[in-house]
Image 1 (cartoon, rainbow, N blue to C red):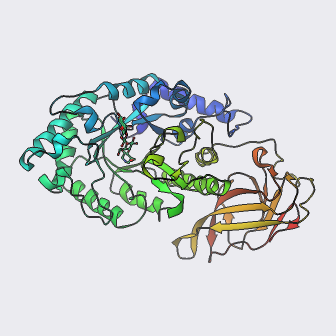
Image 2: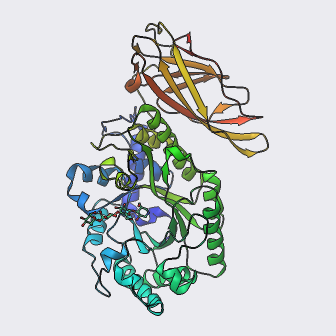
Image 3: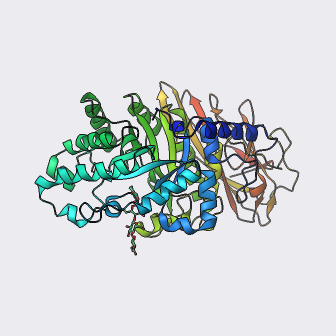
Length: 483
Ligand code: G3I
């Protein structure tokens, strides 16, 4: 299999895909409806494919009987990952007895929907049957190699990539003391990769972990491991960054630069299990922050040539693993429990280059003429500026607009001035942005045109700064000064 994820598609499929994207992009309006898809909308995968990447989702066998669910799974995504059915406890529940029915069902779904499969996972300390954990240390290597050989041989030629080793590190960057590490030391990773390559010469072979998305000790440990494996000539093709994020913990530091340093080793990189959880209940502010996180992850992958794609860890809150593990948390995915698109979907869509067109006024149109709020408005502007060199950097701005009046606003325009040296790098989200010099006008979209009495709405955009970063200080909403 060649180095591009697109190589897993047939030539015809790729042509159709490119034609589909081209046609869609040429359409007069590309509308990312929040809850209803239109025939002309490009899918997330089509948008990603136009950038040479895939956009995928995890899935699981019980969900494949949900026809409303599979309709979206089969159409919106170009890649799927079995969430559980290729793990050791499913594929080899008792020693040397292999079960491929569930994994085969996921591969079959992928084939019938022109999707590639990221196979997950061969060697992991979790979801491991007890017979493995009970082995004498001297037996573990043979059992591991047999497992890899049997499973990877079964799927050879049918999967794009394998997460050969999953989650080898502790948070401090030391190796996790799994049954494999305890028996073989860190050399188990090279042994596993070699066995996987022997069984499936075409699949891309990955090591995959969480909390390695941004700079830190765990990411450094993964980097050092990758350097070492490459130096030994071990067959390692890529590093998977799971991307299990939470808005209450902040966005990973320097994600793009972190991905890039692995790419610079000659490795592919992929976001393999993205979700962005929050403390429930959802609200507009949390959704806006979550949208920013999704935007930032997609932007990071798009900016790194060897980032081959992004996979979300299932696409709907209906089937997310989060609530069962993190009590009181959830709403982590771009589609809600009813399979309706959330703001995070629009954020991904726009970050992949999709254009949201609305019936709201064009950027150059004057502000809506609806009455200004009688008692005013409040604006909270937050940004996370980062530095990319001496006196230059980027930032993501999140703006929460609150109508402090006792009557609803129908149609709004928020105006403010970017400090000198700052520019918008994207059209932003949840508003249409018009920029003239440093003056910015953010106008409502159709779905957030009304801000109820004492209600709020959140918008945001990405920007660049030079000199030193400061935030805008003065805002008007429909020409009324906000606090
Ligand atoms: O299949 C049994 C079912 O028979 C039983 O009735 C039920 C009762 O709890 O459990 C079912 O198994 C569950 C399995 O998912 C299948 O649904 C397990 O309890 C549950 O622990 C398991 O959770 C999976 C988790 O990995 C296990 O660590 C999640 O679905 C899966 O999404 C999650 O995925 C992991 C990645 O593999 C690695 N990275 C982290 C990610 C999230 O934890």
